[in-house]
Length: 298
Image (cartoon, rainbow, N blue to C red):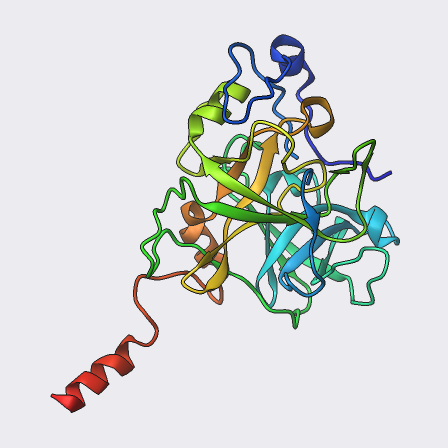
């Protein structure tokens, strides 16, 4: 079975771990859960639906299924976005990526070596600035995904509260009787909820660069989903709005609200290294043509 890269805070759990109440949208009356970065309750994705999805791999493992330990997304031909804790303690030579992977046991693409790791300069652990960029040794021909900047033609609230997002990954999944790591990519829809749900669960105060999403039970990101993309349809296209940072262990808590790193909080950081990355905007790309048309008619 694959090893997870999730950071287990054993002392925190021994002090605060409690049984989760089952009622959806109810907060635990007391106590906290162990803060463990980590798809249960989801379903199998269709091949080709998420071309920018990237499996983060241990270079030393030849088997793709065994090598995958985190997720990420292609945001430019030579750049992948993932979680900071997915690269902690690693050098570029320790990592490879499989861009556009779907079935980890039946994939014929090329594993691309990582040329450089750019972890956020203020990264501490999964509690703060949990984001990193991977520069690839060679360009990928797969489609990349745009990033939600906080602005959009639709006028979507930058905080995303109440939005139903889609998360994809190869993390721990469930059946009625057992847990397993899937070969094929899975997905799940999760709503963005008030920060208070995660604040209570993990004994933290979320910052503006984080948000809370999920349900009180049965649906969640799990071990192996770290760094994976949370996406939303904005202005007619899928965009990256967040990435998996941490949450409650799925096997222990049967799914719960999770904490995600907010993409829009890191626009400047991403632009600094990836000028080719695409971001949402309030201005329509068709506006200059529209103005020209109106001018001619006038």
